[in-house]
Amino acid sequence: MRREGQEIAAFYGSFHEVRPATRLVQTFTFEGVPDGVSLDTAVFEPAGEGRTRVTVLPVVDSLAAQDAILASGMEHGVVHGYRKLDALLADANS
View (tube, rainbow, N blue to C red):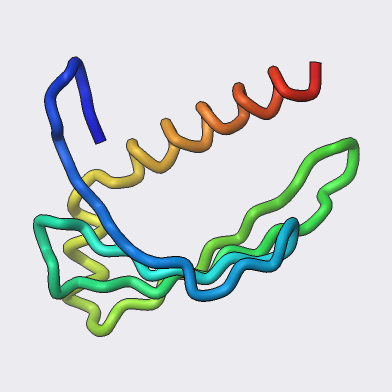
């Protein structure tokens, strides 16, 4: 992840299951906490009017890991990423 040309965070992981248009399962690790692996399942459901509801369930190994993730400010990056995805999909559908 970059801001103004500077790397501010790095992540890695692997996809373990890919069901087009319905489900993704992946591991997700923040490079700054390499032992903090999250297993994330994303489920995609039609929400009417050309919209899709995405529900993501992350599973981590401890409450301490969960608290560290929530305290990291990661929600800003998540919201930003989904806004960019919305814009990309809007362009693709116009």
